[in-house]
Length: 124
Image 1: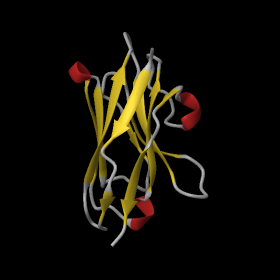
Image 2: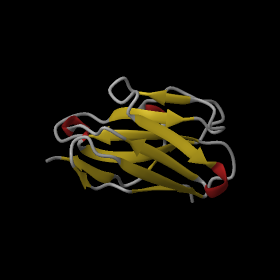
Image 3: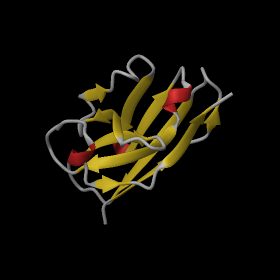
């Protein structure tokens, strides 16, 4: 069974840092991983994505220079390091997998295996 599970969400002050983790299981071939977020009353939006090889990445403009995505293929883990957090980064963060060889557009519609989400709250 294909599965992804997020962890690492927390309450943090503005300017602080968090690292989210995404554990993938059940995959036997290529898959990209994306991080998406959804704030109350807003649509789910893309944050960052990484290709199966780890060589290709995408960042939303709102997080460029602050967030870094990485993956450890041996451990089937993907991480999202979030620095200089802002109040507007508050949301439920979801990890999702695109079970595909190619690095496709980083949009929710392309991703077919979703985790349950982890809450990130940035507040003083």
